[in-house]
Length: 85
Image (tube, rainbow, N blue to C red; front, top):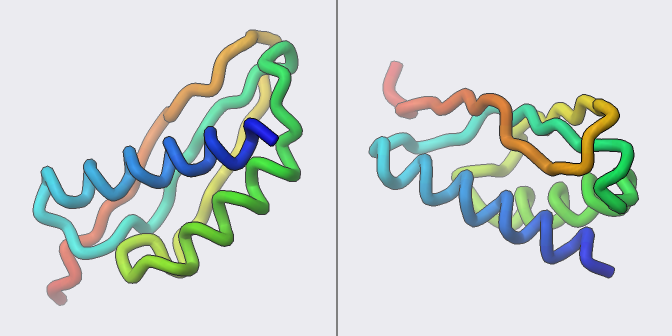
C-alpha cells in the first residue's frame, strides 16, 4: 500500500515546513492528485488523517485533495499558524 508511504512523506514535509517557519500548527494543506498517479485517494487520505491525528502540529488540520489529469502528487498550498493570538 504505497498510499501510506506517500501520506507519511506529506506529513513529514508539513512537519518540516512548520518547524522551519517556527509555526505551532498546520491548519490546512491542499494537494493535487493526478488521475494517472496510481494513487487510491481514499486510502491516501485515510492514512494521512491517521498520522495527522497523532501529532499536535497537524492534529485537526484540513487536507484538501483536488484532482487533475496529470500523473503527479503535488503540494499546492499550506496554511500555518503561529499559535499565538
